Length: 219
Image (cartoon, rainbow, N blue to C red; front, side, top):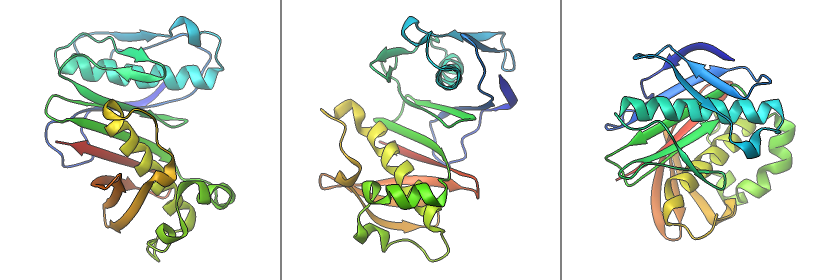
């Protein structure tokens, strides 16, 4: 079930983006719809292969695809998003990305970028961050943590940024790289510098005490 108002403005100062974001509560459903944004109702239904998934997975998928449908409609395009495995397939001339956490879904599309990645994450509990951090970043990367940023928040943020990079680059990647194949090289107030296969890339972020959102927009 959708909770709260639809967000239509990107939190990042990047021109050329169409951003749609909503909050939801997981429920046992096969369809999700909204009439909040004119002109009229927009709905999405589950594909057959997800009909038997657990309620949480179904709700996440529906919320993300509903945001994508709303973004595509705002661009004057058909609202259907194809699938290749778990990845969305966008209409010709469009790049985009979808992300969700347990209660938040985001879709962003553009006609003006060569790649887009977006990711939203709830801040990991400290015990999970301690257990997983060696799979996400190296000891060298860990030395870049600002003293003002709690350990679990930093690990979550780096995880999210690397996810965002994978999404932005996915159309040109032959395989999904491991987290340690991407290297954090710097961090400042609202940006993370990353290196992948000798290419320097930048992920922007917005951070609260509860969660983070990261964006990579390639031109």
